Amino acid sequence: MVQILTIWRFKKDRDSLWCRVIEAIHTTNRSWDFLPTHKALNGVWSNISKTISRTLVLGMPLRRCFKGNAGNGNGINFWIDPWVLNLPLKDVCPRLFRLEVNKRCKVSERLINSVSGLHYEWKWKKTGFSGEEHAEWQVLIALVGSVVLTDSTDKWTWVGSGNGSFSVGDVRKMLQTDLDFSQSSVFEWCKWIPKKCNIFGWRAEMGRIPTAAALSRRNIHIPDVSCPLCGDADETVDHLFSGCIVSSVLWHRISTWCKIQNLFAFSFKDLLEAHNYVGLTGKSKDIFYGIVIIGCWSIWKARNNLKFQQKKVKMDDIFSEVKVLGFLWAKNRAKLASLSWDNWCKFVIM
Image (tube, rainbow, N blue to C red; front, side):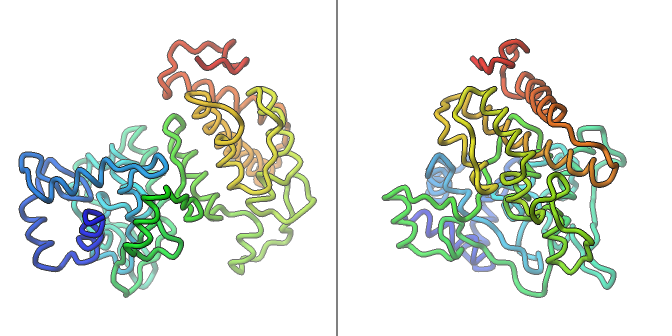
């Protein structure tokens, strides 16, 4: 408990003398962690850092409960601190992080407020990106594109509580009862699918994808806010991925393929949690979670093709895309090199 309180004070009171001493002693050019720790030095701070890193709650590292909330961006490290997601941008875009000249730069050094709006100030070790670096660049822009800097100071929030505030009582209760704080919208990253799909799932969970209803709420004129796939209801995140007839048919076909009971979801969050309740375990459970996100991503892609290219939506095409992309990514990214197409079609993972 004392260790958690110490870390919280360290992130909240960065300008205090003891925090500056810790940073001066433990900051090295080989350690890029949001808790500076000199591996060659033992002592109280090293023990605190190790405890925070090793403690798990609901299978998630306790350190992910600390999240920065950018105000003016002067106190949060752009790459090292978790502030856009519940993990640092250096872990999301490792190739770009290697290209960064100043790895400890602040948010305000990369995102600049001006009269014309927000613009970026990058400092790379080279000009031009490779294919993989460009892909990470697109992910990075998608993440920081909606950030709005203000004149207020940066703050730190505690994801383990509903209101984001830190209290010893809440922490004790969480650790003793393994309190489920899933309502705080901590997106579960799926490691075997591409980042673009994870980013899409994360944004959709927060309602940050440009559905017709979302654009209309922002006072953007939309002639027709109904779902372009079925026309039966307004196009919201929950309807598009759980209530639309197209998505319902897709989940039925995926349920049959994965040999589970028919998947019924009433919201997008239900879809993201379905892998915990369908009876799958181990690798199959992890693969099914990725398939659900790929399914949502494919529905969104089909929706865009219909809306902007007038390309007719065919369920066979959507389902085939989910199976083909899922196979390619699972075989090459999920340590399933021996997986055959025949076994994949039968959902025989191991």
